[in-house]
Image (cartoon, rainbow, N blue to C red; front, side, top):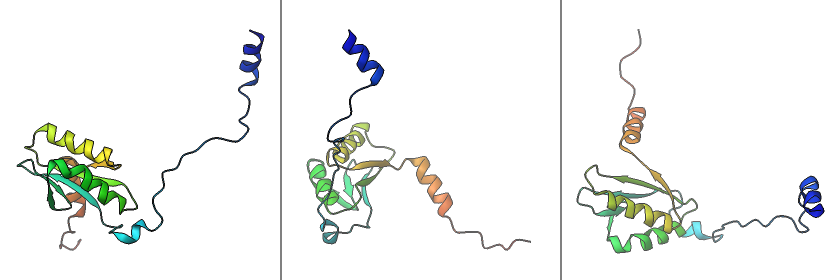
Length: 129
């Protein structure tokens, strides 16, 4: 009981070697092999087919393709977008494939797409009066 009181008052003893920190690192030259600055996107079309940067990918190959693409990039962000008429299970499958391949999911929702199109619209050609 006395020992517990001492630890509660004084706190835990400092660690002799510091804190263990694990950093995920990529190979130093991995960015040189691929399009590091190109975005990585997954799209599910109205037929339920998966597209990775515009190329059709079979459902069974989606995770492997994403893993391959992510190893060639410096950032693990994967943009996801889907047709409004797909089955929810197709989107969930894509989410799982992105996360299990080591990607960070960025979901482009219909509202987000609408907002980005409005902000990217060219300014009106009328001159202010």
